[in-house]
Length: 336
Image 1: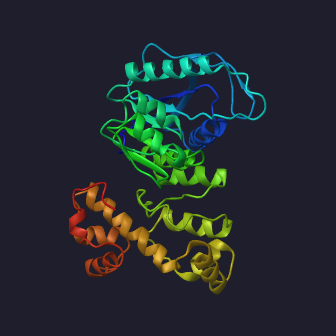
Image 2: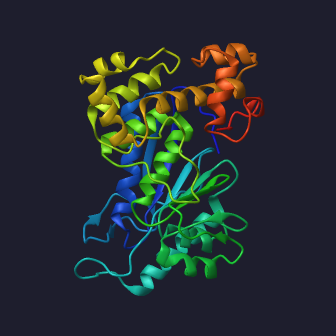
């Protein structure tokens, strides 16, 4: 689901902290939002931490304080992120089982009473269990940590629980599998809200890969081939991404990389899993698909703006990547 965000606006993000919060469930996804704030200034993620108690002892024994009470109401278009918890903590567990159950029930009741149309619900890891108990996953596809999938199916029998997935997005509800998959999900959401370039910059700053499992949404062409940390290859990819239609030569790109054309060709294939011409063609086809979906330009103009010499060449290259014709992408912004 692609959201429409006006320039220079603030998106409130409420992170719900249950007892025994798994700290990485919080830190990973929120770091993605912090980096997104660093990389651009059109949308600011304003993060607040809420819960049934003003403090808690996290999964690693670190006490978290300054937690705001669960609010009586949420602003329109707020994002609510429910994170997971653990059964066994590092070190002594100072929590009381009855108090843990009561606090979790308070979260379930709050979710059930406050999440409404216009809100985006995000669950990280076992946070899906609380969302499921609140009935917010009914009729939707979802996932959670592999060890909790059976429990989620019992707690939310009307939900479609999918295993072996990093994350699942179904309308305004997005759920992720265990722990670091929350980072993958948040990068996906940032790409939807702000574009793949911002998500890619955040991923590179955090030195994380853009992963996907077999049933996950396909990576955008703008993000493919970026699962590496080689600075010269990223420079080349950044240059091509900024202007796919430019008539890029091997020599020009070698200058960008600071390497010989032959060495660049070897490095690019090694680190991206594709050739330079393949990468350029993928981005040109992606640009053509965007133009077809968002404009009323004729095929000749689309081909020219995307860097193809003719509509015939565009169709030929297009068929190498997609089973449908360019005409099928007309008027469908989400296509390819």
